[in-house]
Amino acid sequence: MNRLTLAALVCGTLALASCSKNASETEAEATGAQAEELPIVRTGVVHAEDVPQLKSYTATIEAENLNNIAPASPNRIKTIAVEVGDRVHRGQKLVTLDSSNADQLRINLEQIEREYNRAVELLNIGAGTQQAVDQLKAQLDAARTQLSNVMENTVLVSPITGVVTARYYDPGDMTGGQPVLTVGQLSPQVKVMINVSENDLALVRRGMPVEVNFDAFPGETFKGTVARVYPTVDSATRTFRVEVSIANPGERILPGMFGRVEFQLGTQNNVVVPDRAVVKQTGSGNKYVYVLHGGDRVSYNRVELGRRIDDSYEVLSGVADGDTVVVSGQSRLADGVRVEVMK
Image (cartoon, rainbow, N blue to C red; front, side):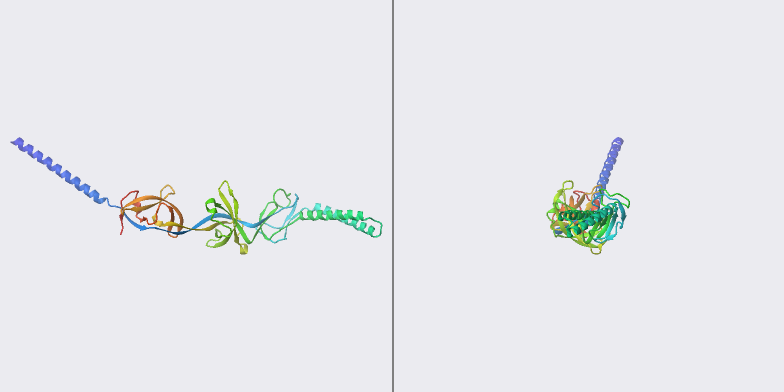
């Protein structure tokens, strides 16, 4: 009897322990499930709207006209009267070159003039011939033309009113393949040369208004007009050259300035999402938006963004008109996760 009683007590103790363990595990599982709360998010419905298609291109300012000041033939420079940045006027003397050739031609011209005058006097008194006069007259005209050409090669003047944009020689140098100076015309307008992509070329037309901004004039916008669209494509960049003209009163805009040209290329009907809905993937430039499905589950949609519009983004792909997107609470989300939407 003692053995039977002991065995019954042992069995009862084991059964009680087993029941206690099962109750503890059940309670722990219930507690864990209760702790696993759904992420709470805020959402918003997005819609498509007509979005202005603004395209911005970087560019460098160029003078409306650029003149290279150089002699017709190599010569030694005596003086240069201007420096880079100086404003010059049309007809202003800029460079003086060696005049020894001109001096020799002037002496020769004076000699021919004397001979011609004597030939005319002899003809008048009947002691000369018309043929001699005509021959000397031809020599005189040729000598004058030659002297005039050499004089143009001795004193170089500016053909336009503008600014000296470059200087390549110093006094004493012998001129060669480069011009002595370069003068750029900065008024009444300057030009901007930009490279437009093939995709946008069909939307760019002559006379189209544009806006130009410069780092040198923050907060100030200049108006311009498309002056020319070049008909050939750059095979390396697959772009077309477009020339934009900008009025330049006061010659404030200078060649070499860096600018941004903005085109208005019509509108497109695209979805617009709040910037808070856009999530950037760490380690890449990819952008994503969480889209709500069935009221309690999200998908991780990669999106292609267009232009920024105040506190929103234009979305070119990845989100449809009427979708509900998550605008806050994305930190605990992943593709396919169930969520609780804050009312």
